Image (cartoon, rainbow, N blue to C red):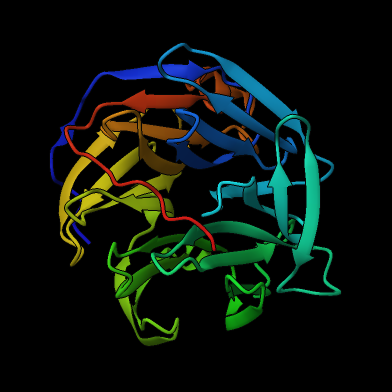
Length: 299
């Protein structure tokens, strides 16, 4: 697609130093007024409080890929290398395994996930060290704890972004530079898969994404050094350049849900690229002139 729309330049703040190998999974947690994000390869979960600049970190025993609040407020759901877990952070870290969509495949890991308005989690996976193998899946975790694989044969499952009313979902195979759209039924059934947009080359690879209050789609571009905003139908609205090449995901948050937290990675970058982009692997925050909605919860 043509991505020649002029680049906009809101003020961008770096709120976390350039030490994340693979920053991902941004989440606004309204109850604690904190942003959470992960370093997948660093096996760590971090939090940042905009009001006070307070920071906290938790070391995990394995790769952690995302965090989703529970509807009952009792801890979180998280995606680890080994599968779905229930996770408590306070007063101390506690983990309760709940199952995996890839049993007996220790080299396949969860990668990205979102909850829908019915309390289900939609999570993708990928082969951790060989993304060129089509071993990823798209799985659904029901509030009952049942795990269903709804699609197989994915290279690098990324995204998902789910309509606020739960009627459709976008999901990405980053290896194919393609974002797909599905119709989503109230019962949690996917149908009508179509290509929503394709990218690649200098545009970068579509990675994590979110929706704003108006239903517009914000996508992070790995290798594109930017995020882009699209209409629900896929028309480009604007591009926002960032001082890191590997932009991984985005999430709205803050008291008014008008802050956009952006994660990035430094894994795989050579010395020349790191010299050009010393902020690679940082966390950024900006005010894009749009508002998000509170993330859906599990349960």
